[in-house]
Amino acid sequence: MQAGNVSQLFVSFQGEGLHAGRRQLFVRFGGCPLRCRYCDEPESLVPVAACRILGPDGERERSNPFTGAEIEAEIAGLADAAPPLHAMAVTGGEPLQQAEFLSAWLGARERRLPVLLETAGILPGRLARVLPWVEIVSLDIKCPSNTGERARWDEHEACLRLAIGAGREVYVKMPVDEGTSHEEVERGSRLVAGVDPTVPLFLTPLTEPGSSRLTIRADTLERLHAVASRHHPDVRVLPQLHKLLGIL
Ligand code: SF4
Image 1 (spheres, rainbow, N blue to C red):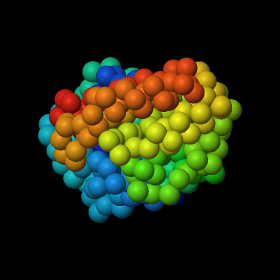
Image 2: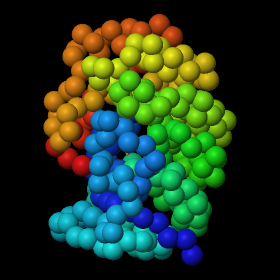
Image 3: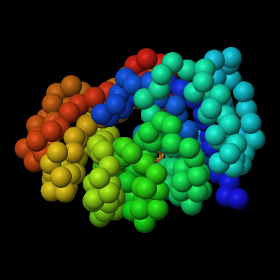
Image 4: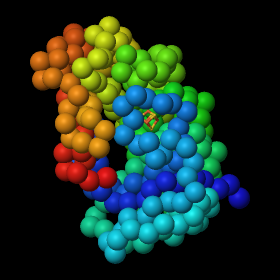
């Protein structure tokens, strides 16, 4: 039986994208192949020894790894104690790093909540393996000027085409800060519109680590929105709600 490395299990409000403000169950996986400069999940960059489980009775830890059945047992308890939930957000780190486990776990589970996959959109082969078990895809476009990583345009485009081709609900987020290049915002917005102009593109203003203070000025954000809107008909600006609320 496959086993997965999970860093956190909790219920919270979705903080980003099309479903911001909806209450969801979060399964956060440990491990990510990227090292974005602005990463706000440093504890999920590598597999972790213990998973933090945050329930109505407080926080506890459980050692990794998890089988699919063990995740199910934990999330059933969280879901039962929570008000109605919109979806189960599978996030990270980069959850597709554990694609084999994900497809085994999600493929075997009884369908209850829709699955929302949050991915950096850089692993199309792995996305294809997991897509049959996913209803909603939240895909990032990573700008090298603010990640400090190399460009991944081809991988982003391949992931977007796969998710749309599979008929999934898709939205794209582009994290931006004061250093984000206009050319990259232009390229990203053209990429999304070129694949499907009905896919909403969210410019996500970044914040200082551990704070809700934005790292982009309002006038810069307006300029980036104008640049993106020249190429894509549905560009929106949405700060990370969970940061403003001071929640996970
Ligand atoms: S992809 Fe996400 S988890 Fe990975 S380094 Fe970038 S921000 Fe952090």
